[in-house]
Image 1 (cartoon, rainbow, N blue to C red):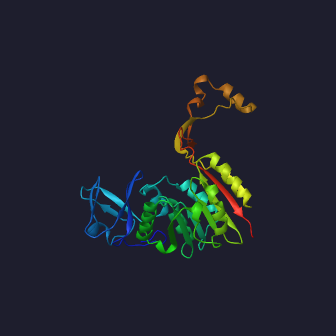
Image 2 (cartoon, rainbow, N blue to C red):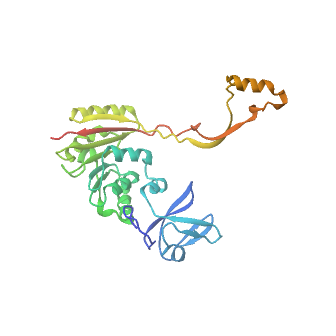
Image 3 (cartoon, one colour):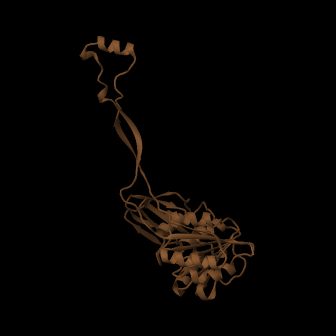
Length: 304
């Protein structure tokens, strides 16, 4: 099992996602002889998981059942242990697109945090790319290294425990893109520029406050970056449902023959069209929605 390569069969040491429902999932490390408790009963790893196919329906000890899913960056984002605030799929998708990431890309990231964005980047740049991620907090850096090994992507990533604003990314002139998620990204622009290739590349900064965005944009301009833009992504999910609507009344027909026929009929014989209705599907916006998460500032380093 790997987060960047699909496997068919569950093996010992794999990370699987136990799917109890759309709002209830949990990651589990498969170990021989181990057990996992769920509200539907016990899952025994040796007999219920190892050797089964990913996506299998597993019956628990109480008779209930769960699905065992192959891990993906999207599933990991909604199930990972939070060490910091994380980026979610809505922002991650735009970051991956706007940074123009592809297989073989070399990417610098700071900070690593809980690894939500890191896993999506690794899947995108595999199998020949590389991620250089910097984390200021020592324990978070050690935990990230451990997770990358467990998820079998450690060959694609280098984790450094240092201050990116003072020490940079540890590389020079080899990155295609740089991502910054730190309190003062404007202090790391110099190091980001030196890390990007001479032929140019892209940079993205995630900041929750507009004051951070302003200072970052000023620093980008001072260092010669171009195509600077800032956007905010708000997800608005509409509810699709079936409704019954009354048929519209367009009034009597103007055709003279139809009018003459209608006048010849008695009142009881005139069909009552006022009770007809039509069934259709409609989409309604949510009354409440997730609000502001942060601003994404993108820029391009031109060719030297």
